[in-house]
Length: 299
Image (cartoon, rainbow, N blue to C red):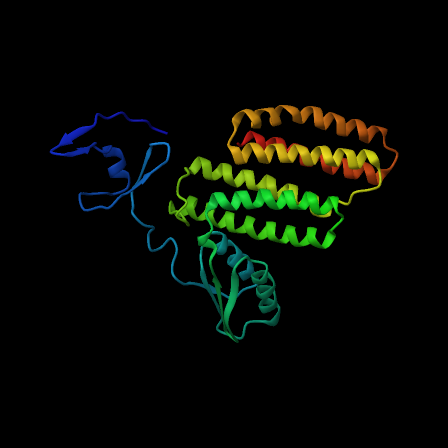
């Protein structure tokens, strides 16, 4: 990243600064060009070379031609922020492809098939732009906390439902991040983050998703060692979550340091256990601890 220093100039009652010629040339700007200026809470300004995305970035309606791979195209374009997809075919869309489209669309958040004809299917995504990106991350953390509680209560149906909610909110967040990184346009009004922070958000939420998958498949045994270690991992996650919500670097660093002690304890319990099932559970809990440390490193 280039850093350029310029002196602030004053003309009448207005202040201004010259923009780098290299930047003007790179983006083909002239005196009639529009730029966007985002004022951040830390006092910095983000100047972008365009006020809005190019027409080719995200169209109001994207046409996809029916093929054995069209479902993958639907998912890819949904992740990129496309809200209106139309699948067309010069012949009747095969039943197998139609069924796959229905199955995957039903798994996408706030997404519905709004029109369905023999040679045409219209898919629309509603409402995901209304949720601020940072609130999505908070929601993911609270859902993991709920999954820990569901496991403690042996509420398996609730556990499955909570994981389904986790997947949906994770998907919405991926849409936010990928749309911003692809087009430099914020999906919501929550526009106070940089490209680097966007990548951190993505990695942070991938770790949350990984913890969710482990918890979904985990079943506690009657073993006191497994139960005790589960409670310790639960506390460890809560400490990391608390550090994130408070944006407390000190708490995050403490959580980051304690991971080795927790993992060492888990491995010791595995060596002492004679039950293969308990060993697998302890190994899964160790994986959660490792992901918690990665979360702490990203705070």
